[in-house]
Amino acid sequence: MQSFYKSGSEKTDGVIPVYVCRPDDVADLFDDLPERQAAFAKARGFTGRAGQITKIVTETGETEMVLFGAGAVEEDYDGPVRTGNLSQKLLSGTYKFAQLPADWDPALAAIGWGLGAYKFDKYLKDQKVFPSLDISDLPNNDEINALVEASHLGRDLINTPANDMGPEAMETEARAVAGRFGADISVIAGEELLSENCPMIHAVGRAAHEVPRLIEIEWGDAKHPRLALIGKGITFDTGGVNIKSASSARLMKKDMGGAAHALALGQMIMANNLPYRLHILLAVAENSVSAGAFRPGDILSSRAGKSVEIDNTDAEGRLVLGDALTKASESNPKLMIDFATLTGAARVALGPKLPPFFCNEIEYVRPVIERTHAVYDPVWHMPLWQPYFSMLKSPIADMKNAGGGFAGSITAALFLQQFIGDAPWMHFDVYGWNPSSGPGHPGGGEVFGLRGLYQWLKDDGLNS
Image 1 (cartoon, rainbow, N blue to C red):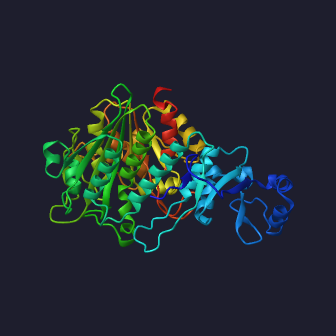
Image 2: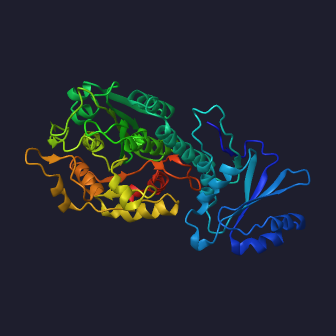
Image 3: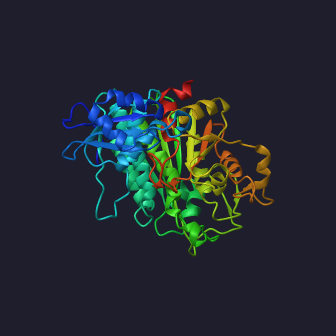
């Protein structure tokens, strides 16, 4: 992986300064610049509008400084993450922020740079070389690099096609992360899922050519608060017997996005040595169609001892999560957080880039919203509206796995809630994909809310 940053220990000769300003500050910037550079910028029409890039060159055509527009403060929804436009568009070289808007956090501006310096080019002959940012004057440059690196990991996992990111490859990636940080890892796979009482994970994945599995990573000091991160890892979702349409199946390589989120957040925590006893559980399977596939009308048992009637085989993610959540709850965590590319209803409600989350501990809700918005990685709270659980009632089982066309993200969350016991819990219904590119967020696989959750956990969120 290319490094997008340079620190004080590295040679940084020929660093190109970058001046970021708002329209109201352009006149002052021109007054501060040497006359020739100011005249050049004026001639190029630099006004400080959002995303505007003006390169000032020497007489020999070499870039000597860059001006970048932050836009008006009242319209600055991207904040410091907007600097991702720079790393996407500037030529290779080393740059350094010489000026930022007063309300921008320099660390977030550096993170935005790293988030923008991404392209999934694994299968391309020509691979892009991104420019580097000198962050030697920032005290937390190791943390900045770790957050960006984990975000890139999550994107890479989601972007990789299912022929190269099946259950076995997901296990390989998890083992690599665990090995890097000295964590313990264990895997329950195939028929062993039945003997180890994870019957819903087995049922969803038993029709595929690679067996399903529950991957568990343990890390940290036992004296610290126990935090469980659970991810839906459906490496490809055909919809099962209730098979998807061609258009719906097209992006189903991303249906393991929940597992990518859990693993990426876990890497952020381990890389920065946050004081938690971490338990990562990845419920991994491919939802395929064959003679062994589970069917509509089947009744499955679960690790929690509750029976589930299958209303729709395309509501499979909540099944694998159910067993994983139950197993996570058995260790009495201080908090469980699950991530899943679970419902289209969440996208209808909030769109692709604002994930809803559900939480049974109301005191956590506002701090999480505040932290995620503060770092420009927003999420939004949705209700666990208990009367809607009636939509999941079955006359022949404890519940159904789907509840019809209304309130789909809420009924999915209520289904998951049946498997958590008494544990404090958050559920994030993420899309895992940018349908279009934006500052710091190239189109394609994406992780949402993780930097905000990391910040909340770092700020001692579980003890606040």
